[in-house]
Length: 93
Image (cartoon, rainbow, N blue to C red; front, side, top):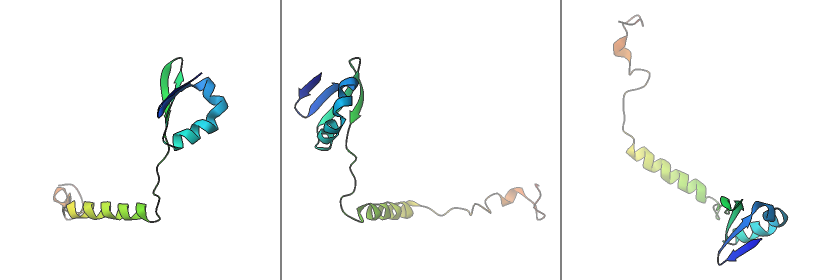
């Protein structure tokens, strides 16, 4: 049994089996589709929103990298950070 509400629908898993293609189309169009089992909500169908313009994702990653690089502070080189624990021969002091 399908219960229709404006922009939202709850449908049992057993009913959804026969109309999955239609439910996917409705979810892609923005309708909130919730599947239920024994009256309990178990899953929501939502479309994956991807970058619509070529290069959008790359530009965003470059922006994030630039922000991270600006926040990074120089520290001791990892290869040398523990040198004070070892003698000239490379053995622990």
